[in-house]
Image (tube, rainbow, N blue to C red; front, side, top):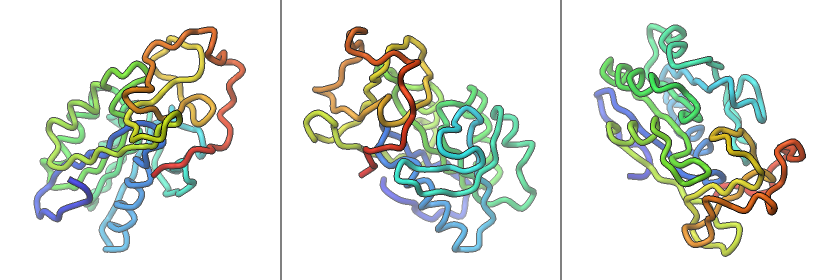
Length: 208
């Protein structure tokens, strides 16, 4: 389902897709609407993601919203305000496995929990946290980007640098969106940019 459907009970909303598909932008949009409705909102992001701002969630299109920086899922419960109604979490794939139970617990407490993250890594393998959250969530929104090669709807993140690490934080110049046909889960190393030469510059590819 697209968007948020009101429920008086706690629940989980998952926004997921490839890079450059507008996940953070959609998360920010929903959280801002909750703030406009005068709901008490708390927003969290992992310390690992410091590409555009240390204490903000920033979309590739430069939309911003303040957030608490966390070192792990336990920090979310530690910093949660007593009167919080809505919890937002960005880049949920970077959190430890405990984030699934934390989100479930918050929803069981009657809170609206909105999370955003990549659903697949650079090989096209699902991130376990996001897959589990999709399974228990009441609402799931899959966002699509535009394939950098052919212009078709894209749901995969093509890594353009030479690295075997599963987690390499980066933006345009290091990744691009690809469709199923154009995606290469194991690109030839000689065609990839060495990690030390790839600088996360300002993005040129924006979300849909």
